[in-house]
Image 1 (tube, helix red, strand yellow):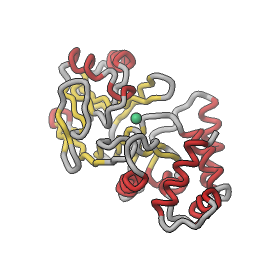
Image 2: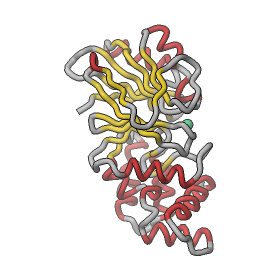
Image 3: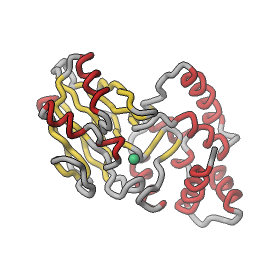
Image 4: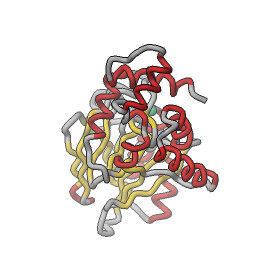
Length: 258
Ligand SMILES: [Zn+2]
């Protein structure tokens, strides 16, 4: 099992620090939007930064990449279809990031939707998915279409139930409030909302989540469920022909939900 620590940045970002197994002393960071908290975590855990994995081009995911790469000589990996503010090894769907010295290997999945070139890193029963899947939610569609995002979520949903999902933001509580509005009869949503409310009141971290849990509580993974479909149709005031239409309605609803 991977040892992964959350590094907090900005108001609600997590920059995930992955430790090489077997005390090899090296580490990998995912989406370092800010170099400073990463430097502090490396120092605290006495780790050498060997690689940087980037999921997409937004500043809160890449802001610290250049400084960290320069200071530590760490290799940078990122999406081939986007531009990052430094040199990096471009990755596309099906590529493999093999960090043999660290005993780590990740398979790249193209997950367009939040941005067009967004990628996710899958390996060691874990998924680092940036702003694609959140606990009980999904990323906003800044560049892609509902069909693209739903296609990406469907591919993620095909991974095993026990896959640990490392999302880049602590949005779980507000997402669950929305999930409860979509599915007021979903006991898993209501129970999780209660638990997350308590956890967040103590400033606890709700991640990683698991895919099995997300299948039960995440409305964006449940577009085929009759209750989610009915809620979307009530919201739209019209019958919706398929899951992409259901997804588009609940994504638009979430954008306005307070
Ligand atoms: Zn983003």
